[in-house]
Image 1: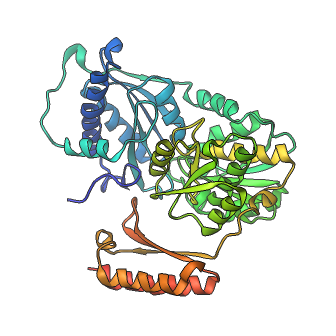
Image 2: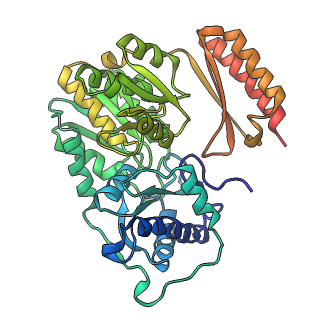
Image 3: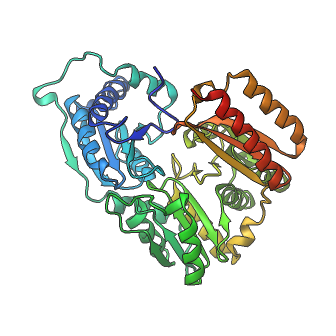
Length: 453
């Protein structure tokens, strides 16, 4: 049976893969695994029962999934603080600051509205490692001793979770943004309220778009996966820059004053150089993933900053950061982790930091982002194939090797199965866009032929 957990929790079609029954069972299993770990460590002793915090993004299916998760946790003897709609990084933060034994976020992040997902955070606000997820999955459907009477969990609602998060953002990114006119595309998601609040609290002139979530419109033609509206809004408003979040606000992409895209690699470079200059980058190293553009690595080398590459997924970036003692990491897709302040990707915090660098240096976003000269990069997603065989098919391996030989040192090839969707990603970098496209299309064709059926 395929592993239920992907690179970012359990994710899929709500009422398809992600049902109320699965949500309840996952919550019970998590309570047994993570609650038992808390009891063994003595964390739950003063309260008698373990404590979990639960949050969600605004998509409609989150309402019934939240109810199922809360029911499962309480039935398994876990006290629950229900936080309501808020960004994933806020849930991670409040897992830590509340002293909770674990947290549960109900969100499908950048996926379309019909999808949803469930991801868990360990004590301290860190995403679970593979071993913990496998332990939770192994308990699904197994028999257990149900608590009764006073041993069942209690449920309370927390009304000030969003306010606590905004206060944290102001302290973590205190540079005034006076004089900056900024457009925020909130993706009709979790950033819709707290994003504009945080920027306005620092005196930015904010134009908020797609900030009226109704449960049905999350990520619909907007946010970090659809930058067209942000480009137009920035130019129309005469703004200095724009930032686009995804549905749960754990990632961000940007647009400069002329409407040109600024990706996660470029924002990571801006933050890395600023921290390096200020003497705030331990070891003068940064963590990125295998998907990062080669131009980022060259820019860091020029600035005297080392690059460590991890697997794709912000939890793998964070694992590498912790292992290597690095305080900054991120992904081209816009997951940026500022380890001195956060335990997961935080799109709003990263945007505040980049805007703060603009304000502090009086430089435009285009000027700051120009430190990275991106090599032409083509990404082709190949759906409807057996992604489990992507690493083992010999013909596909030979095709990749031939492409790498053709590119030499002037580019690279990356072929990997998606951790969150049923597809294989083919990424090619080359000196010219035409060459990158030709090689990517050729490899995608091999993937379709070899991995179909």
